[in-house]
Length: 87
Image 1 (cartoon, rainbow, N blue to C red):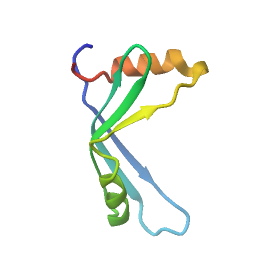
Image 2 (tube, helix red, strand yellow; image 1 turned 135 degrees about the horizontal axis):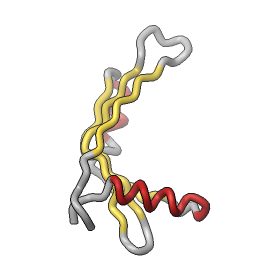
Image 3 (cartoon, rainbow, N blue to C red; image 1 turned 60 degrees about the horizontal axis):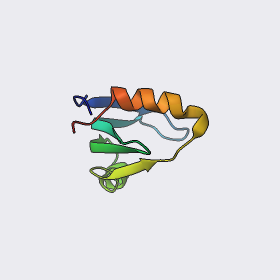
Image 4 (cartoon, rainbow, N blue to C red; image 1 turned 90 degrees about the vertical axis):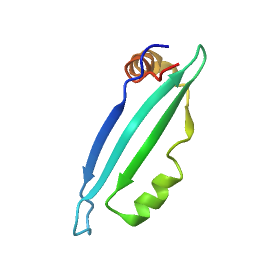
């Protein structure tokens, strides 16, 4: 495995019926790969909504297996290389 690239993302979404934009910040996310599988990790995430912060607290810091989708295996390998975790 190569050097870890720290991923960061910001998402703003306007939902019908909501008066304010919902914002989500993801920090320090990466993909762990081996010969047969890929896992996704988000170390930190937050939102401007309490209910979403509560949900994000249940998924941050955990390893999530990425299901194998044969038609996207080449693309997943590329993304894994870009967001590879430090070994």
